[in-house]
Length: 448
Image (tube, rainbow, N blue to C red; front, side, top):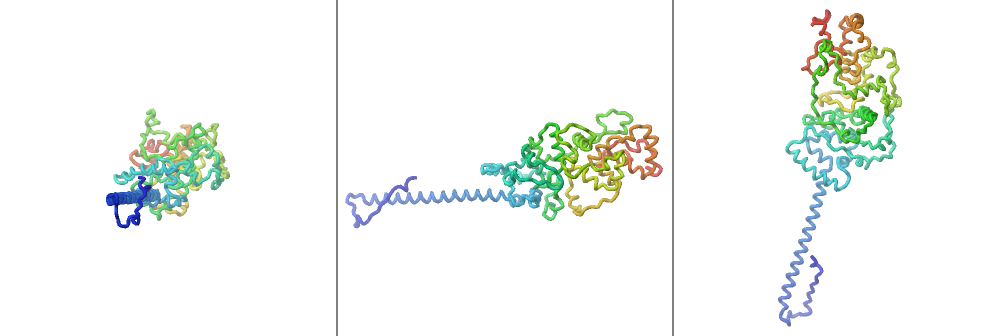
């Protein structure tokens, strides 16, 4: 390819008559012309090749650039939940790839090649629902967020942010909902929800309770730290759990078939670790722990209310719950104690108004919520003090406090009137003891 170094000097003035004394002038001239044509052809080939190569690089760059934009992600129908939540989040001015791909041009190219399988999945049918399998890396967060920045937690929270960073806890462990509002955990990103994901509906489908760290994550992690574990070392701890169908547990399995057990006083399905955490928090289970679960550990202003220290509070709190259940749930709702976010129905979310709902005193509402709430059930699965002595309870408390239909409404918080139907989806009572086990014919004022 060194043809450009050759020199071709045509000086017709040296032989104006075109004479060739040696008789070889015509032949040499033809050779020179052929060499010139070859040289020009090579130059053209070089220019065309170089132009094509530059055009190819430009095409690759354009494809990579376009496929790295949120607009491209939005072209796939199955990405509607992720794209709408992204648009509504505080991170909507950055590209998806800035969070989801490890920094470096090499990593970007590798990711693009690996993403070709997603094109195939899009054609034959994507996963339903789409579940994140790779956590956002710490170094991606640090491209924008410096670890030296002074963090001011909202409200009255006490958060040792620097301590968490020095411990090596990934940002995503606490901030997993900051962009996509935990749509996977909430079960609202499968194929049946795609059409509902619009900017118009985004306010009803998102909220601070899903975007900010939930107290349940703090509680769960702190409890494991107290056991000497470091859950964040396993990156799956920071990823959404795969959707799994809940298997119903047969009532009574593993218990002796005593007469009393046929009526059943069974401990319901409360996760053991959740129950232990709650018992630690309310002071019934005293352990030497590294991180206390009491309110003042993480809150500057919140302490146990004074009325919780009253004698026989466990017997008297029901009346206050009836009058102000909304106040109780500020501390005692499940999301404050459980890392896992409860599954939701997107149609129900779209119907619910954003206006603040004023609680109206209603025993049936209190009963329903207390049966599903882990905090309530932790205590309700156990017999109250006035139920412990069977004779006293039968002849005194039970007889005097359940004589009327109105009085029995309080009993229905923990007990059912009729034998529960295992085929129904109704939430079971904390206790398996039901009234008709003994009262076969019902009650005078409440016949069968």
